[in-house]
Image 1 (tube, protein in one colour):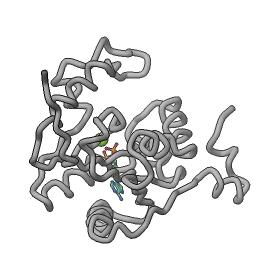
Image 2 (cartoon, helix red, strand yellow; image 1 turned 90 degrees about the horizontal axis):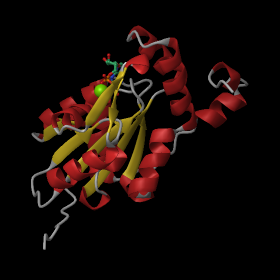
Image 3 (tube, rainbow, N blue to C red; image 1 turned 60 degrees about the horizontal axis):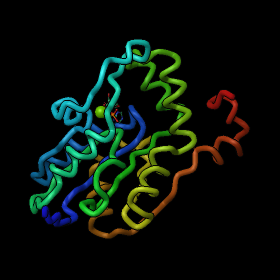
Length: 196
Ligand SMILES: Nc1ncnc2c1ncn2[C@@H]1O[C@H](COP(=O)(O)OP(=O)(O)O)[C@@H](O)[C@H]1O
Ligand SMILES: [Mg+2]
């Protein structure tokens, strides 16, 4: 029988594409001297990325495969690690101590993703997901309210975002919830960001 011991050693950095996960996790990792794992690369290296989805220019993740690989990665590990990426809710909850979801105002995110040469469809799809708050909802579902912290990075640099994360790890002070949908609705601008 395999005994799985969970040690809550994992720090997760999640958020929509373009919110700064990779950059922020890298800086946080070097400040804390902790290994950083990018989930996309990890899925690839673990043989969990299936045939290319050519139309959308992305690989398709085999979620069962990735869940197994993540169980192996986080099992019986005392050493801390940061895992960043777009599928963080697949990380076994019992090994997770902190979840930081980076949020970015939809207008800023749209500009950032357009600069990245994303297709129009992909920009719209990702901006909509940020308006709705998909990553934050999925994280709360997977890990519970108390572990999940959201950070509005719209007016922060990546190093400032890292400072904010370190502050939250010390004080656990705020569980601010960010709701672009209500904000844009109040401003009468929701139509600019949601298609039907
Ligand atoms: N406050 C910020 N935090 C992180 N990245 C930022 C910030 N402002 C602008 N950027 C830029 O946003 C882009 C997306 O960053 P990246 O780390 O690749 O995002 P993700 O991994 O979430 O897709 C990078 O070009 C980065 O320099
Ligand atoms: Mg990234």
